[in-house]
Image (tube, rainbow, N blue to C red):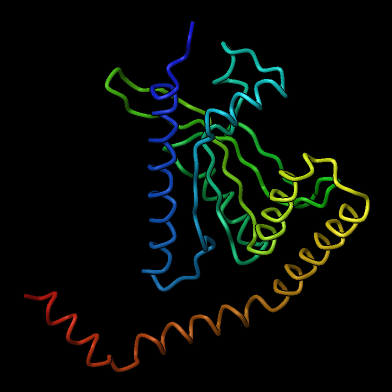
Length: 223
């Protein structure tokens, strides 16, 4: 029987939209309280039909087990400034009552052979449909900005080489991954100083007198 992909993917699209709003609101809540947010950016996507089919073939996933065996049809990515923030976000996700953590993979303390680092959490998330509640699986990747830069480059190269990197590029990628993690470690050592500076900058920005252009916009908005 031919699958209706539009109908099948609809709950996943709804989940990504809802989770992006909730996680971005969490960041806003920290900032509104004048606290440092462990969340810097939140993005999300639903796998394309072509990507799903390719992974089903590569991983030998049966059609009737697709919803259980493919955990990343709905994917969220949270970027953080510091490694410590990642684990704070993990704790925040565990504390939520609107989702259930079902699986975790820590590729930060146990990096992949390629040098890849990230924290993966698979969640079960309930979606309210016209027919009732449907629970779907979604994967949340949590990483620093530096880790995300490396992973994005590696992902782009993977399209060209299909995972079979030349030895020279492979060794350079591993060195770049280590350099990226060293950067994260160094930033963690001066984390307090960085956060103090960011709070100071934010405070000064609020106190700065508004330009005539900004005042004019405010005047128009109040009408």
